[in-house]
Amino acid sequence: MHEMSLAEGMRRIVEDQARAHGFVRVSVIRLEIGRFAGVEKPALEFAFDVVMRGGPAEGARLEMIDLPGRALCYDCGKTVDLADRLDPCPLCGGGRLIPEGGDEMRIKDMEVL
Image 1 (cartoon, rainbow, N blue to C red):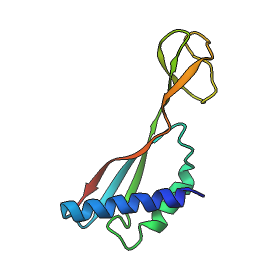
Image 2: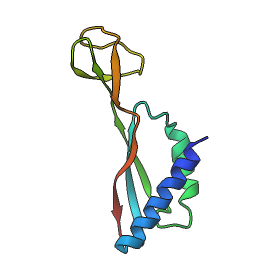
Image 3: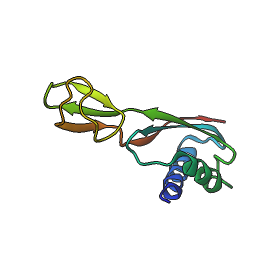
């Protein structure tokens, strides 16, 4: 379950930002997750609750924002959203697609006290 290590990474970021900016509590963390990031959201929610105990984000609400999978189609030259990494281009049906997004995961912002 790599979601535990993802949550640990988020905790390090929160703690670093708390030291740098002088806040003591985080009430909300908004996390952007790409469609192809391979993150199991229920597992991440569980890991988040466990890992954040005793830190500035203990009890914080985790809001997960879905980002689409995106690819450039070499056949029609358009950048398109994809539901699945192996889907053909939804515009032209072409199969020569180069991924351009959807595998990222990043903290968008935090509400702090």
